[in-house]
Length: 389
Image 1: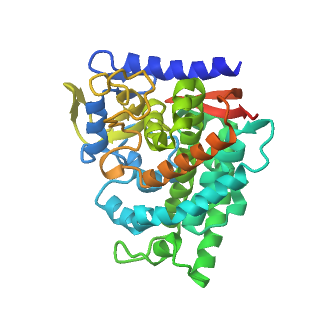
Image 2 (image 1 turned 180 degrees about the vertical axis):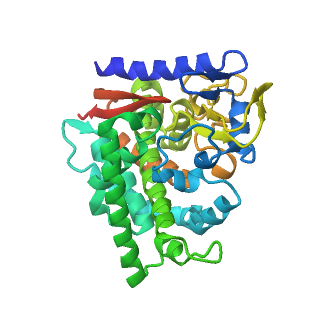
Image 3 (image 1 turned 45 degrees about the vertical axis):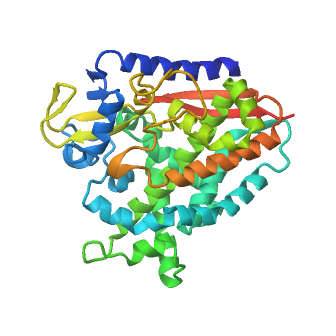
């Protein structure tokens, strides 16, 4: 039953957070071979202190890295300052509030188009969750959105290739195919931009000389892969989680319908309550300490954002969905040097989509179909449908 599946997701987040924040919220988990950190202050420490808790798994992990071929390990999210700062500045202007503001009419038009002729059961992921962020990030980067199906397939194959999942022959084959196809596609895009510059993000990267020389073709591929994958995955999941939260809380949906000014605050509470990413990895550059625990060099440390977002020391009634919660110091977009580059864009995309869904689905939202799949740090929603009037 769809309602049972929604309840399972909400229960999983609640129980995981409760278990994690018991005691000091820091413990070594043998099956993961990692220290897992749950408390808000402790997670913030891990996310902020890059000199001790590095994002560079290939350099600092004391264990073999089974997914070492994943291009995401060569991108911004796996890079430490000062190089991280240099490369982030190259594309930062494409994600400024002013630049995002200029995209909003196009995003609204895309949403209207995607919701045209919705009849009966509405496929939230297929009709909105995938195409909206793919088209948006494609426009931002200057690549063609007509490869949407390929972008989705490539993103899913690349993001799922990590840890023990690399042992699955099917996932391994899908990853290799995706990496080869995406690399070939991006090299074609680079050639087109070199021949006919357009003044977009890719042109900026092609012309950049961060170390006195141009970025290599492999660095360019890794950089653009990260932007495409993360720009699609995080916004899709935020949209899905917003639908889940509002379907499960009809009172909040009714208040939102009566006052659209509550939309931004609702999106923030969704980010806290059901974050797009359950946790993120760091690796100790030397002996480290968290909440009195001594951690050796090269250890994997999992910063559990979903637990930090429900730390009762920071959030009153943390397991209650309370749109408009103030303050709302969630860590769903990270903190410090790796604060999500596309956070402003994702917030706007979600808000525009929610307003359109409120218009299109005037009755209480009913989840008519759902399929889920478990990941190492949470539950992925693989299929989701709303019942249209």
